[in-house]
Image (cartoon, rainbow, N blue to C red; front, side, top):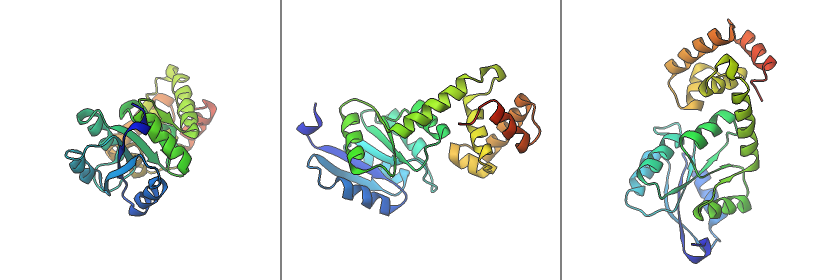
Length: 217
């Protein structure tokens, strides 16, 4: 069914109300859009989704209080598979993009800085059964996949490459854990395995190794 033939019911979740208000402003003049639910936490959104029919969920990825956008997307896809998911994020990092596309299986992903035209196009595309990934998102994802496939000889996993990307940016373990939605203990375990596989002993030597092997985009 074409999006022009029925009302598209939208839900928006972001921990910053100003972001929700901004999105509503961008969408308010579109006749076929109806903002049927909004929330500042993933938990509150899940409660609303259980009783409110929704076509498209617009979700932030990094929500520090409670469940994050990745976990929310996984739950929605598992329990409410008819809902399409459009991720909106400040992050255009390959690690985050790969996780949302491959594991959470979102239907679309655009930067929060996207304009009204791209936002509307993304919603209409996914509600009609397509997928929509903004150009910079696809570019970073392709770079990440190339890096991943080009380093199979040293047997680095996707997760380990994601962590190396973060280490190169000098992220601490907590920052890496928050970025990849894993525990700090898991980060520590991966760090040890990365140093062993790359035969490096410090961040400096690992970063040099990553540059030589083109592990960083």
